Structures are given as structure tokens and as C-alpha cells.
Amino acid sequence: MIILGIETSCDETACAILKHEKGAFSVLSNTVSSQIKLHTKWGGVVPNLAAREHLKNILPVIETTLSQANISKDAIDLISVTNGPGLIPALLIGVSSAKTLAYLWKKPLIGIHHIEGHIYANLLTENKNSKTKFPVLCLVVSGGHTQLVFMKNHLSYEIIGQTLDDAAGEAFDKTARILNLAYPGGPIVSKEASQHKKSNALETHLPRPMINSNNFDFSFSGLKTAVLYLVKKNEAKLKDKKFVQAVCHEFQQAVIDVLIAKTLRATKKFKPKTVMIAGGVSANTELREQLASALKKDFPEIKFCLPEINYSIDNAVMIALAGFFRWSENQSSANFQEELKTNWKNLKTDANLKLE
Ligand code: KG4
Ligand code: ZN
Image (cartoon, rainbow, N blue to C red; front, side):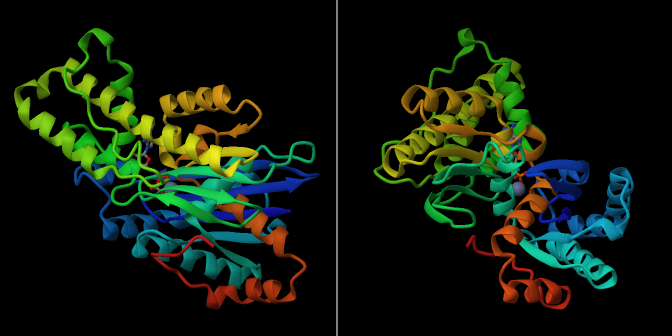
């Protein structure tokens, strides 16, 4: 089976071709056209600029992806597109393009929740001999979401905890802005943090919000404010690389400490067989390594899954993957098949789409 994936929910115009054969996946092509340069000067994504850029890029991106996969349109069995959540003007470009292709090429079309895509990025390496064992607990950490999601089975989602304010990625981006670093903040803050030397440690510790609260929720807005006050008190030091590195290190560790504590607590309570991590912040090397070793120490029998770094951040392979699993879990339903056939006109785009 061959699936064409399309993703335009934020600032990446992405298209991919995924093949599923003999129980295993292979990525035939994967194109991501990033708009980072365009949005950097605004310090964040401007929805209408993003839409204009998606509109300019979407057709060349789809064309390149098809030609790199070296397949014709006839070989495609399913089109899978992100239809929410995200920025409406941006989402509409991907969804309209996917609908047009589905109509012209007479292909079934499926709409995918962006976070479902992030979660399913973990299943790219699954094959006949190593299937994902449920229940799964997934820590979702992106620019818009921070959630602990419990899955009893495929496509079954229970959000057991989430951020009450800022998402983890948003906190990275805002901290970068306070420190006069570029957008997106995550990769830059983590690079600065990696250059920090213990001998330059800050005198003050940043808070680990809600780390001891008896639930699975998060809060990162206070942490960002603590960084702001720290920087205000030390304005002159903003030009000192060592100070910036120390703040990045302490901030990153504060986020990681909270994410790990809550994931371990949820693992203890919900007893998953597999723990996963998903979303842009899961590209963070320290988070990956520290969570892996904490889980290995406390729950050595549990399998820990990580998406490849390329597939942690926004891409269309994950949307094609989720499309495959939605299709394969529902393929025997005539209603479902009919829905996919008529989605070229009926598929809705929803900025606040719920994970269900
Ligand atoms: O999943 P994603 O690509 O887009 C959304 O769905 O939001 O996540 C983007 C977020 C941004 O906030 C970015 O700063 C963060 O992921 N991010 C990172 C790293 N790479 C990307 N955060 C921490 N460390 C990283 N290495
Ligand atoms: Zn994302």
C-alpha cells in the first residue's frame, strides 16, 4: 500500500510518500520546506504569512516528493492530510490541495489529527515481528501541546494530563526570545545549554512547576516568568555567553525534570507496556537521554520508543503513518470506506480538532 501524506498545520510545508509492504514501512520520499527564516524576524509564526508561503510551496513540494519517490499518481492508494489542530489559514492550504488531488485522481482521502501523526511517528520502525505493545503511554511535547496520553489500543486516546498554560515548546521559544536568541527557541536553547560548564552554574535555581502536584498536569508559564525576572535582574549579563548558557541549561533542566517526574508517575499508575515520546520537543537530546535512563532504572521491563529526530519535528511521514493505521483499523467498515471516498468534498478543517 502506498500513502501520500500532506502536512501544513504550522510553518512547514511537508509531503511524503510512505510504502507499507510485507508488514514493514519504507519512506519513499520525504520533503519538508521550512519557513523558519520568514518568521524569525517576527519571533514566532505569523498565520497569514505562513498561509501565503504554503500556497507558494505546496505544489512544488508535492511534485518533488512524487518525483523523488519515482512513482506515478496511479500507484497511490490513499491520501492523508492534517486537518487540525493548527493555524486555520495554514491548514486550509494542505487540506484544499489534498481534496483537489483526491477528486482529480479519484483517491480515498483521510483527515489526520496533527498530534495523532506525532504519536504514530513512533511506529515507523514497527514490523511483523515487532509490533507495538499496548497499553501505550505517550508524552506529547510540541510547540502547541504538552500532554500525557494513555492508549489502551490503536486510535484510542485518553488525555490523563496536560499543560494548564504554555506548552513545553512554547516555553522554549519564549525563553529564547527573552534571551535574545532566534526562533524557534528549542534547538537554540538546547545548543546553548550543551555548552554550559558546571563551574558557571547560576546562583539561583529556577522553579520546577507542579513537579510534586498529585496529578499529571503541567504548567510552564511561571517558569518562563522566572526566566524573565532572572534576566531583568541581570540585564548587563545578557551579553555574557556564559550567563546565557547557564540560563539555558537551568531552564532546560527544569522542563526536563518536570516532564520526567510526571511521566514516571503516570507509568507507575497506568502500567503501560510501552512508553513513547512525541512532538518537536522530543528532538531534544537531553530529554531523550534522561527519560530513557530514568525509565530503564525504574521500569526496566517497559519498552521506550523514540521517533527519529527527523520525524520528531513536523513532517508528513507521520501523517501518512497515522493515515495507514486509521485505514487499516477501519478498512472492514463500509461507512468508513464511503467517508474516505467523499472526503474530497466533505472533509472539515478544524483549528481546535480534538484527539479522539
Ligand atoms: O511538533 P513541532 O515541530 O510543531 C508543533 O506541532 O508545534 O514542535 C515545535 C516545537 C517548537 O516550540 C520548538 O522550539 C520545539 O518544538 N523544539 C525543541 C527542539 N527542537 C524543536 N525543543 C527543545 N529542544 C529541541 N531540540
Ligand atoms: Zn507538530
